[in-house]
Image 1 (cartoon, helix red, strand yellow):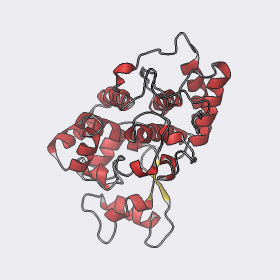
Image 2: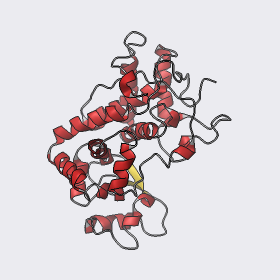
Image 3: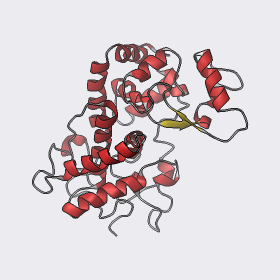
Image 4: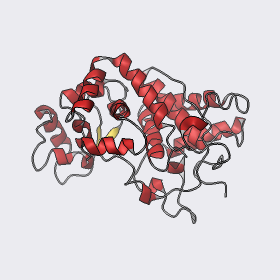
Length: 297
């Protein structure tokens, strides 16, 4: 079902403090650990791209699910989402879905990390299935070229505008060396700034442990259009980041976002709302889980 089944202030009559409660808990978590903003945004991205925005990313292994999505790629934030859910359940038991909590938490993370906010419609229901097998065919890879990126977004009814706007989330968060050392060895990717390549080589030497590196070499906990300026300077990590400059339509959007931070904010907010509407369950579909890591049955 499309995002047409969602509405603004969905919980206005059933749990009027739902969004404020999520925001308060998220704000406290990010105040304590600024890196949590990236974790919440990434959880929503992974949830929505795999089987739609139905909180399937949160389910633990079970007899019914076998190996769920969360077993495929290690992500942070599961315990944090459970804490948010517990706070919401304490005021409105059985009313607010985990899928909506993920959407609210990502929106509130943008507010904390970038300093702007936006409305996001709700009314999502939680799915009852989760499969690790569906992850790698759905999540865009850091090794993708431009056409593969465009195609993977198009498969979710997202546009080139959405692809470039949402890529700005790589101004925060971290990556493992293994996600980008293909650009360092056996030869250095010529699109990489040589000084930045040398820094990355020193941090990620061959044969070393798979260390973690900030996605952005500038203000790594501030969500902004810095990502696009870094891309133009050859100071982004992934093949998929550099790929945005290899075709005209994506490169033009990178340049536009680098030049105008306010316009990028508007594009990012609109694309977050579109992403959070991918293949949602609404109405009588799915369920409202009591605990985000397990179905009600």
